[in-house]
Image (cartoon, rainbow, N blue to C red; front, side, top):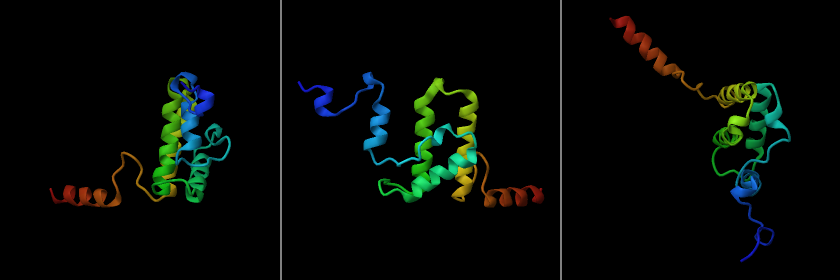
Length: 122
């Protein structure tokens, strides 16, 4: 049976499988230290630059950038300090703004216009 070194595969036991996925899948080539930044807008800008420039991604840039951010948050899990988690969650909203998407949990303009029209009828 071939060893890990012979196959080049990483297993969950090693604790490095997520790095292996990031390096070998159709993931983004991220700028170094992007997730250590403390400004959510800078994190979002960096992810956008990476997603827009990437030739490895399989989906649209917004989805790739958001997926990479979510992947990092999920992989860090309970080891991620709350302050950094909050910063990364804010970076998701900044990504939405950069790509012209509505913020999560907030209705788009049409919905708010319809609800204001409906409420003024009553």
